[in-house]
Amino acid sequence: MKSSLTNMVMILVGFSLVIAALLAWVNHITEAPIAAKAELALANGIKEVMASNDLKVTANDTIRQAIDEKEVVFVVHQVVDKSKKSIGAAVESTALGFGGDLKILVGFAPDGTILGYTVLQHSETPGLGAKAQTWFQKSGKGNIIGMNPAQGNLVVKKDGGQVDAITASTITSRAFLKAINRAYNAYIERPLNQTTTAEKGGK
Image (tube, rainbow, N blue to C red):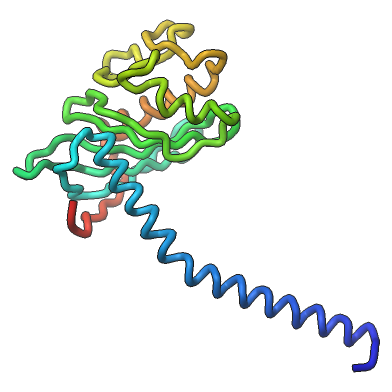
């Protein structure tokens, strides 16, 4: 092929189209496995935060609330036990941390008592996200398990609450507790602006 600007452009365009096609193909074959893995991780997370392996998700409510002039989305996974009695819900909630969004999954008993939690996603300084995963657990220094946000004390001690902040990381601690309190409000208030998806089956 004769060397010319037109030929070079055609080669580059052709090369780009081939790369784009390959990327689309890779994305297509990996999309389903990634989605399945995420679904399994969420199912296991719900069992973890609800402190029970013998449960069933009956509905997944997507709730939208206006907070600080921004729309914040929550997902409330309604849960029942083997006798079909409600044991509360696991709520996905997000707040802005030091490095970006901090997303958690927190389990509430029917009265709002915190049963457990897990950190789903964070953009905090390396190490802080891992600390948040353990710091507020029952065995951690900032234990919140068994507390109820309705009592108004689910804030760090520096702000007048009862929770010990992560050492040298008050911002991350505040973001985490804000996500917990927001999750509680979404669970208790249950605004009309929501959509419900029935659980597809299984535990």
